[in-house]
Length: 220
Image 1 (tube, rainbow, N blue to C red):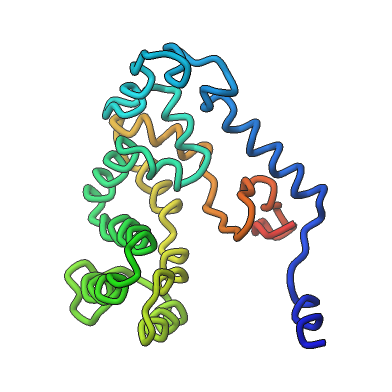
Image 2: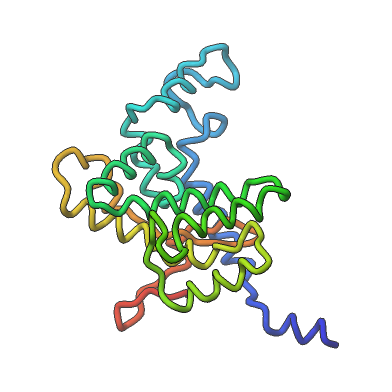
């Protein structure tokens, strides 16, 4: 009975919504999948030509790669060129600590379990402790929750803090005030979407967010 009561409190998504989300996600990334669409140069999966991978790893991004940055902040930060450009502009605005914190938390999630506790404390000392050299701004609720989580540190102890540093909005601010060198990110800012976290399925944020009458975005 207690299990059934817990199930009543869980958010249930209609299968039609799940199917629509999967279809939208697939369509969005299809042009970036060499197995699902024709790519130039030749498909590296079925040929010995490595040019495609070389172009994807280049620090000089193509328009094709830059457009992908607009899918989400996470996609932009996956690209070494996107990450470097974003960090460069954050440094020029004296706010690079937000991105460095975000990347440190992402790295923490991939650490071996035996290294997690020590690394979690290092992140706290660098970004959140009193007198931290790269202090970031958090609201009191996120700060207290993160402090509580570190009593038993785990890979996701900084999850709430990571969500609340608002990197997408920092990026918009930078692009509005930067010069022409921000050409890649100015494109990204016009297509920006916040990160969405799900447990069992990847759902594009444009299928979840809807404008309410007060101009605030909320879950459909």
